[in-house]
Length: 121
Image (cartoon, rainbow, N blue to C red; front, top):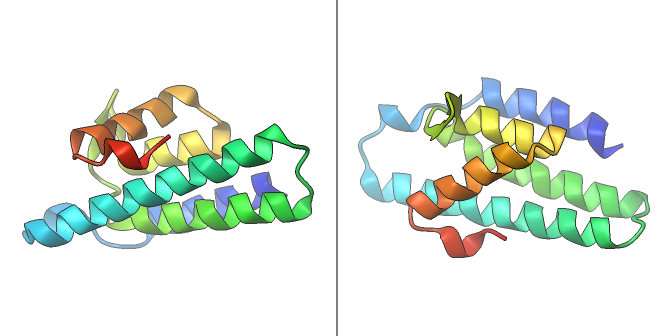
């Protein structure tokens, strides 16, 4: 069920919102980055918790809901680069939809680079 929910959320998140490069408000950008890294960390925690047990449908629902929050937090930052020719949106989608550990490493490194490394797992 999670595999069906997350791709749909990713598509919505990537195609909606506005780019952080359009706004010059540094405080707002910092808050958006902190929110994204907080949500990414929450997704990692929920995913790891679901992976340690045999999750029932409610476990997948929790991970999917937390993933949705992370996708929504990523929207205003989606065009920021994270290396390897990827944007934050592309790396987030790959990490959450495809269990791409390299992409997850890139988004965790992004959080480290913007000063919120302690928010991720």
